[in-house]
Length: 373
Image 1: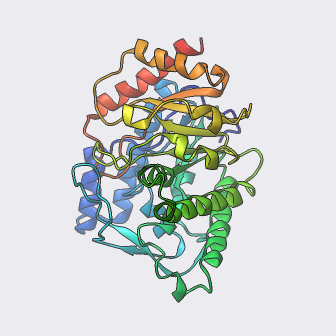
Image 2: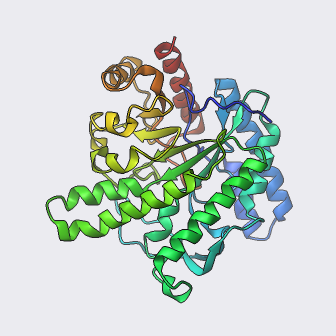
């Protein structure tokens, strides 16, 4: 276990990694009743140890378990909270680019509370037990704002006198969950957040129409309240970052638009770092970075200018040019480098091979060594 508290690092990674065929087969065999849960877990832990060793070999000072213990980057976490139930074969209001549709969702089944037996705790404990000295075990969890979207809490009136009461329960459940991770030795948590990209997309779409924009403004204000309420109660020596994701499912995406539409909401949230996606023109310009950074010497903006969606390797000169542009707004000391997202937000994964995944992460390390030489 380590007490290093310098994350996010100049070369960092978002979280999810491609599931190997052995792990996918183990999941399928367990679901078919061909192997036991214990046998599946043994395969899972062996694969996690392998990818942790690879991340360390590449030079990463914070490593993840690749999210190998979950099916989805977000739903498994919500399913583990008390008062939240699985909803299989769900429909969504918006599919990914190419009309690719996710399959499952969550729904309220009672008051939302902390679950001391949340399966993520055992998963983190295993990860933390195998990281070498001087390396952080990084835990990723989804933003609480997602519970207020995609019909997940439409039935709040069955359990709450007001939606504000639900909001307070969600804050409390998250704070207690984070405190439990901390007690288990976690010193680096990342809140993955597609909600701001959803708001960027819709605030841009409704710009100039106050009536149409109002529901999205209200959601932005609620999202800010939720996150501010949680972040105000985390331990001082716990690094908390957020990844502002535009959707990452089988190499496609959900949302477009620049960060200027949400920069004012993000700027005073006391994150230690923000992972921002900048791997293509639909992400907009670097202009909002100065607002988001807010001249906070303790905040790092991690620029995701290397894509995790496709295998082609970016030219180092191109990445260095992007950082030259960013340095005009933010000191290099407050910048870092990563891929724009993880490689497998769901177990299906993006459309590249594991070898190509490692090549991307090696590129992150090589360019970071040049930038911060």
